[in-house]
Amino acid sequence: MYGAVMVTTSIPLISDRFTPPAAFAAYAQAAAASGVVDELLVWDQMTNFWPRQLWTAENAPLAALLPDIDSYADAYALSAYVLAAAPNLGITISTDAIRRGPAEVFQTMLTLQNMTSGQVTVMMGAGEAKQVTPYGWKRSEGLGRLEDQLQNFHALWDSTAPVDRTGNFWNLKKAWMGSARGARPHLWALGGGPKLLDLATSHSDGIAGIVPSVFPTPAAFKASVDDLKKSLADKGRDPEAFGFGLWFMAAVHEDEEVIRKALRGKLLRYMAGIAGRVEMAAWTREGITPPMPEDWHYAVKLRPVEWSDTEIEEFLDRITDEIVDRSYVQGTPEQVAAEVQTYVDAGATWVSVCDLMPLVLEPEDAQQALGRNIEICRRLKGN
Image (cartoon, rainbow, N blue to C red; front, side, top):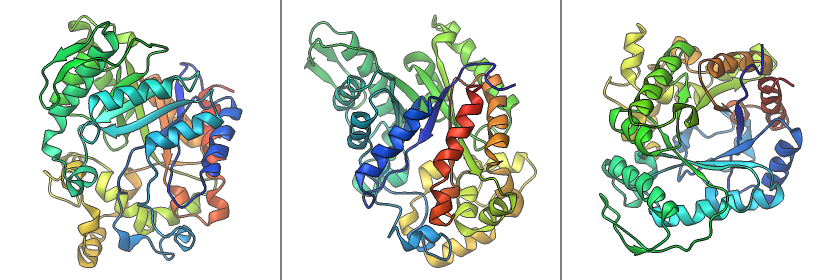
């Protein structure tokens, strides 16, 4: 049964600097008008996951119209733009703790929250090498900076006077950002690992992960939820006030053969190898030889701009059809909604189906992806 537990629905807004911004405003308005989409998910990316050599018309018909998929729009600026067009829509921005300081993030979050009657959430991880290393940041500082971000957010929000605080990387010295307070934006943790989970249950409003990359089954997700709720209770926090979010790496289409063809193509095959399981050792536990060494993690190791043609082809050859098939939630909107619902029943309070099919469909078919995602949300809302 759909809608047994009310869940916050979010759909990705995949932005670039080639597309006229008015198209993103229209996308936001269509999502808001549906009545079943609560939020847009905007990715704060510097570059995409795929090596540039794979973005060809042979692999993706859209490449004939879009010169590259690395020219991302700034997530915060675009969020403000679309909120002006759809002020009742919530916004979730996924980012890292490294590239912006706590005071700047705090100011932007409060500004965006004032622009909407919905909820503004920032999901913050410890960083990806491809986002930080080429631009002069150190990915190894991610967890320490995440701790600063979470603690400084609370210090600034709760302050009625200038704040002094010593952090790992950012120190506040008589930091005062005024007394204006409206609705409170939320700051969630994004990712996994013992240290990040401890920071999340100590300081964040929620945590998000990926299906099936981290949680291949609802039972695995429920076990994590139960553990985190126990940790929250042990720390004197209310487990029911904490959010549990899931992104679903998905392939959505009405035609099973179209999905099968897409999954056998290079773009979706590559993504399965990179992030079908974010821990390569997870493939070994499932009885499958991983395409990378067991200690390889995309967040730490992946820098796609540096990959050679030979490295790309050798990597693709190591990714089996079984790996690809296990890496995506796939099917019709109805089938995908049914699978997402099992995770809602297991404890998810926020969900976003991240459909990769538009990358490899003919442009006219790709334009139907918004309608497919709205249909998924409609079923999750029980409408």
